[in-house]
Length: 341
Image (cartoon, rainbow, N blue to C red; front, side, top):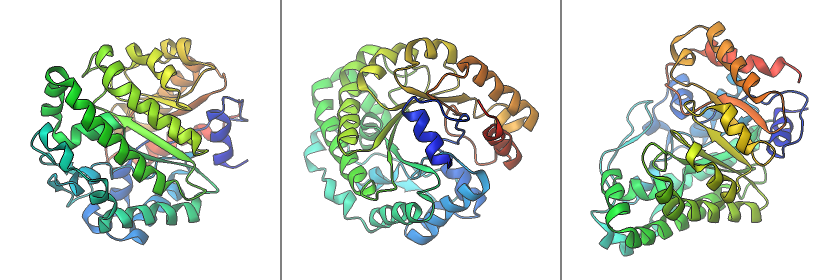
């Protein structure tokens, strides 16, 4: 059975022969391991795809999030300044618009017609051609809430959610339209099996459940529904403490929900088990980054014990991880692929 088949069983909450194991995110780790910079590969679909292929050959994912590390480029193509001259994840250094009164000036085509965006979409398809039958490829991008925050600037966006929520919804409409336009083109390849939406700005550490329910959840539900109607799998990652949002996650209805390390896995299981596949949640910046392989295995074992061997679980890290994580620690996590349930 391929890793892809094992991961699909987990997404469908069926019992696989072993627990699927993977790395979520990891874009800067992949680029660093390949000795590249983001600026050096963003315009070259062959080089970009090869970075992910090389990472897969080193790691052996059951599920992979291609696009990790590329998430800030759409806001850059809309006008936000960006720095990407190293293997660090590209960093936005400003906003694409100065205020909500400029939302009407935004055009999806500005992103889709950008030559680098076209190169990135081609890279997804080249990657799927090479490894899409071995590993479950779930393309990743910011969710609509985080996309909107990148366009306006996070501080201005957070203030606007409190002071001008109705006009924020107009920006949310645009960001959802943009997200889906990109996702639709990426998932046109039959071996691009789905879409992951990452929402760091919709974290329970940054907004209240009320704000999440009114300004993030409806747009996530829309994206998940579109993905399902396209015959693809959907995944959702929320940074920080997502326990207050778990009922909303069930209403949004992704196939998989990815938890950050600070979320108690047992508590999440009580709410989610049997209703959505859960991925998580070894701490990405603890032993995984600076400890020994034995410590990584110990923490991973604690996650497995917390889940208890039931279907619908993927062992992975709780969020993105530093580019300097040792390969032996990554392989320590992946060693759990050898354990039968």
